[in-house]
Amino acid sequence: MKLLQKGIIIERETSMEDPNEVFIKLLAPFSVLCAEAQLMKLKLPLQADNKYTRNFSIISTPRRTKFDDLVNFCKKLLPVDIDTKTQSATFKRKDLARFKGGDAHVTDIATIQTRFFRDSHRSLLTYNLISHVEITVPITTIVSKQKERKGIDYLLSEGFYSAMFHLHDDDSKEKSKRDFLKHEWVQKYFATQPIDEVAAYFGETVGLYFAFVGFYIMWLLIATTLGIIVVLYVAMTEILTGSSYLTTI
Image (cartoon, rainbow, N blue to C red; front, side, top):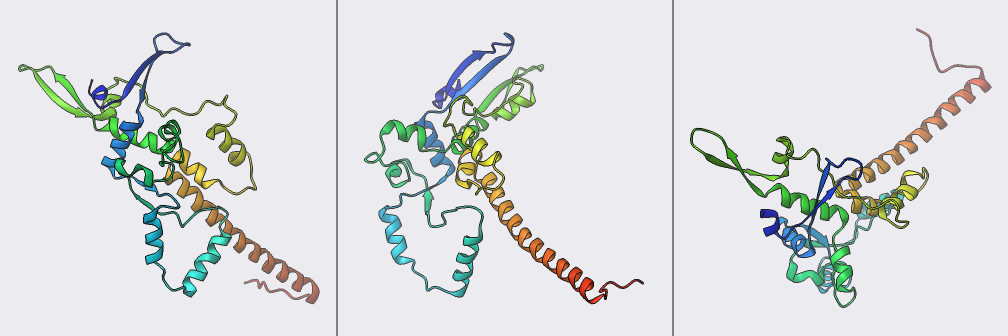
């Protein structure tokens, strides 16, 4: 009941394989997501031509240093394409047009409501909402009491529900994000990692992890290449000169 009061849409669906298995779907409308994002102080990217962005870029024009040149050089070596110039701000519902994808003059309302929040953001906001809902649990004692519990985690621990998981895109859709990541990322070994798409689907933490792993492996490959060159040089020197750099103790 409290979920309904907060605006969550609840659907009940029986499993086609097992009639005794029931799925409860929780859907958060756009207005509920906006309210929760403002409550969580979620940071979202601003519009590229936002007046706040322009003012900020005019004010913050530091002098170029050698460290900046080093950073730019490292960016070129990164095996991922990351936009480091995008600015973000704490989300506020009244300033929706300031944020990327929220301008009603550029994007229609239906697209804003379905595409403004990333899949990972929608999952995060919905989970945060159902994790803080107060649940009244009756306690059978000599004196009848009621105790307040919070969240879906309590219901899972007490066995009211067997599991909880986020809804994914249908694999039958040709242009789904899940299908894109499967064919353009998982099944390709020598390709640039789509970090933005990974972060949009799995969350920023997972996206940052794979960005770091890609950067780390790239530098390991450089060290490995140098090591192979040194080993080959030593081996060729031993063959040509007949001397050995290795001594037996």
